[in-house]
Length: 638
Image (cartoon, rainbow, N blue to C red; front, side):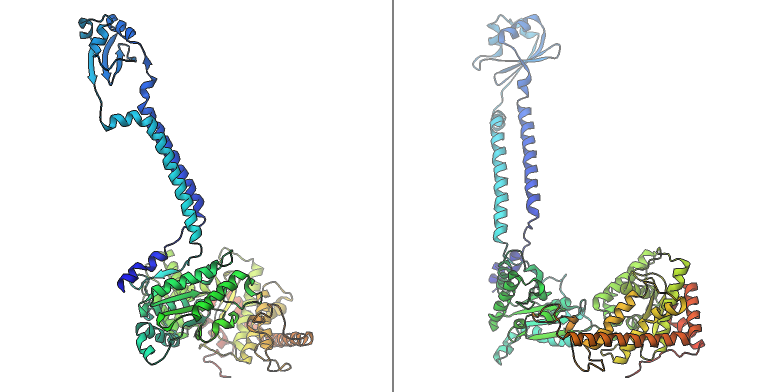
């Protein structure tokens, strides 16, 4: 068994392929190397043949120069005579190999006495280097051409190999013995129900025999569903870490290419490798990229995506129980998946991962704070209370932003003040203190936010206000931060109506105080109108239309019936518009009544905002109490 695993090592199979963009850079790199080799050859050739640049003379002229006493040194090397004249010029000549220099010059009348006045040296080269230097003018050009051809052949071969590997899977492997990337359930806070559901998968991968003996078959596919940032990928990695098996992860978009059939080929390759590495987990992130409903034109509707989906369906349905390969997938859009993916035998087990509640948020914050030094005033429970609706990714970003704020101010510990500021930064964006408002704009913004806060404080079903600020953050010139006292899974009609009235508080305040409107309430109007339409078309909260859902999730028709197709007549559409308008008008009248009756309190809050630019919850509640309004202390049950 060990030999088989070594032979089919998934790490070798999933080595990163050379991307297409690297082909050009590799070619130019080889070309540059060839040019360098050419310069090297030219340099060697010049060094070897530098004696050819010296002036050549005949033996007779050399003999006359010796007799005339103008030569001071003669050296003989391999039949070449090199004469150094007294004026430092160098001339060469050739002699016969059978005779010595003395015999050669004596035949031209040079006496022994003439030679005795000149320094004469004789050198004889031989061996490998001698022949190499003599043959280098021929060998080096041939060697250069051979190396250049080899580099070009290697380049073409690499391109051909890449073409053959185009259909191979691009999945990333986390090996069971990789301690650096290994994640277990201890590293995942919250998700109690999801971890209990997935513990069966871990048990199956560890002890499949007890399931097979009783005739049970573990689900072949597990679909993780949840909002973005809730930890779907982390939970899938934790399952592989708990079971100590190979983990192949790939995104749904990595299957789809321009050429039809490539995605299906990659699916086949991925499943084949996973079977060889079994027990293993295949994790497909964002499976809705390839798993959308077929034939409806949604998500492009191209043949490549549909063929990839068909291949996934075939591979999952062709599994044998003994394969010990589990397919996990994650998506935040389960409503758009093809029904064939969700039928029994494929992704027949669906695990929903909700946003963490207050206790889970505190546990997640503790995990992300392990390597961060905290000051004595840090209270993670308070932070968890002020972050309803935050996902695990949001909480990680919160802790990271707090550490960045502390480091920016040259402090060695993270304080509670840093955590509070980072909450607002994650929710709304960074402060824009350079965005300076004029005196008039500052006053309008202060009254606008004071109107939101006042309406929210008077209405019985609105959430309590935690902070009011006219410091610009992100795209907002100011903001009113209201948070529920306790986490809620359900919202009532009365809560929706109060939220819409609270959203119109700034709009009404600008009308009452300044007798004019600005572009400030534009986002408030968009949010409140969308909420009113959802009340009518999704939640059945309209008295005239009654309990009927007129739109699907996201206000779009599903299962191939068209993105913009309406499921109701024009007459019903007119009734919807009337109901939405009625809800907005009622909310406007409710906010107008509150602003008119509490105009003095509105002026006090706005004036305080202009002075301090922000009001925290404690100070705001004191202002309310001093003006006869009791702050909310507990949630009102509907």
